[in-house]
Image (cartoon, rainbow, N blue to C red; front, side, top):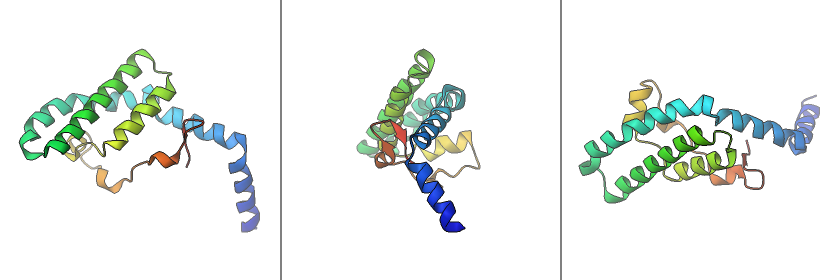
Length: 136
């Protein structure tokens, strides 16, 4: 019975329907309704955090966090002006992930019980570049 279930799942995963289901889920997860407000809040905290921590960071770390802040600002502009531009949102999210996790201090301010270090990053290999969706 388990073998039959596994075979059915494998067939479903190969089908075009599964791709569209995954793409729809990603669009919902990355939608303005879900992410815009948290991204705005995180983005608003960066300037002060960067200023307060500049002397504690290496130049490389500072540049990485500064670039990450720029990408968050760019993402918020897309949410404000082109909320349906899923390809641009994915592109910016991938670039943000290349910068690593946001500063834990900022995340702790927004969600004190959330441990960002426990999360793994989505790697570029997880994205189907042909369809611009995450492969789960």
